[in-house]
Image (cartoon, rainbow, N blue to C red):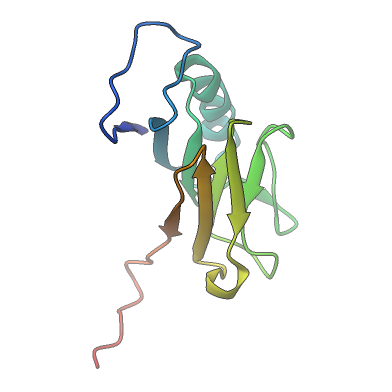
Length: 135
């Protein structure tokens, strides 16, 4: 269902559940297939596994709005049309900024700053029925 990765920049993790070294972010990517049940299960998994950044494809949507994601999380998505991808930041220790110029219904670009580290995430939905143009 979901892949969980730890991004390590030279810092070692400890066994403490609440201590997070500043350069380690727990990330997950998931394809929800517009399912309410899958979204509910994701919310439980985020809490249990202490996931801080989630990359979602095909969120549960009602009236062109993503639903089922806890309000205390920051959800980044396109404001125009029915978005097929979203990036969710669950941790308050991570500053995040949506890059609107590079975001559309199939792509979400977010600048993430945990502490003094800054990087960009790109979350894309690639429709396997739609071929990429060859130039």
